[in-house]
Structures are given as structure tokens and as C-alpha cells.
Image (tube, rainbow, N blue to C red; front, side):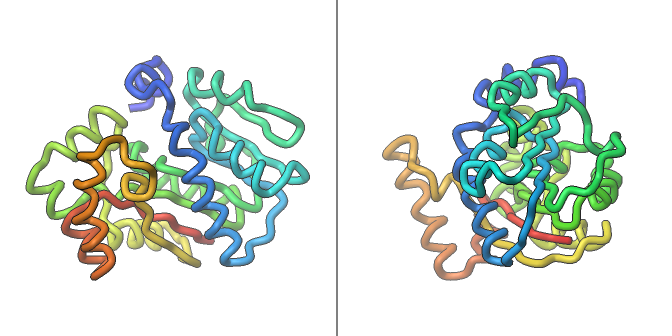
Length: 231
């Protein structure tokens, strides 16, 4: 699957490389780091794409810290490279294949669902930093399984080849040797401005169900991701 990220296919299908959602993601990441009072001086983003999440985190935490983005796609790297400064650096390489270690925090934001051997990915990532932040799409729900199309669309449009529920995601991380420190559900489709009046109305059942029973709403209706802080 790596070829779609290196041959330009992914950029063709996702011309903004999801940068429009990066400030929202960075806000969630910042919140979970601050909530657990994690002190850090260096942070790495594996599969950083256009680099906007790191750029937003730099603006939040300040340029006195070190921010390093790793991206195998030359197209994503070229977009990210334009944002570099003395504190923010980008590398067109796979961090997990390098000898670089010693980061305080390593992030994999919407990444390992794309990786063929995601257990090896997680075990190698564990050696790179003390703390890790994951953002994991929860593609499996009663609705997505019954309809099938949402899962296939995810596979075709954004390259997801593995699909998770909250419980499967937690089990995967624990099996790979991680200790969960904190977690929360996220849903950009519910929290970011609606693109149309129809989509605004369509999100109401999810919001109501989530207010009544979070786990049940996520398992049945879908549309959420999982933000995890681990070590």
C-alpha cells in the first residue's frame, strides 16, 4: 500500500492532505497532553502528512521545544517543508527505519490503520519515545457493517486497510506493549462546522445518542475516532 503515498495517488485523492482538520486535531492532542501534565521538550509526528498538526502544536506550546515530522510521501513532505523553521523540521523518511530515538512524545495520528504490518509498526514506535499519542478512526460500527459502503469508501479514498472498534484498538495497543494513560472519543464531523444544512440535521441523531450513552452510540452509529495517550 505504500505506493499510493509515494506515487502521488494519495495527494490526488486528498489534495488538502486533511490540513483543514489539523487545527482541530492539534487542539485535542494539546488537551490530552496538558490534562495528564506531560512535560516534554521534543515531539515527533510519524506520518505527518502536510505537517499542519505539528505546526499548530508548535504555535500552542512554543518554539523553545523541538518538533520533528516524518513523512514517506515526497508530495506530503514538499508541502510540509515550506513550514520549517528553527524549531520545526521535516524529514522525507520513515522514522521507524532510522536509528533516531529519544523523543519525549511520538505521535501517530490516523496512521497505523494504513500500515500492512501494524503490530511491527507499533512495537518499533514504542522504542522512539517515552509517551505516544494515537488518533485511531473507529471505522467498525453496526451501521458501517450493515451498509458496507462506508468501510469500502474509507479503503478507496483514504487507504484504510485495518478497521477498529474501541475495544479492538485498546487490545491492539496493549498487545503491542503499551500502557494506556488516558483516552477520549473525538468526532470532527460533529464538532467542526457543518458543510450544509442537511449535514447539520443529519448529525443530530448522533449527538443525541452520544449524550445518552457514549459507548453505545459509537458502536451502533459510528463516526467517531479514538484519541489515546500511552506509554
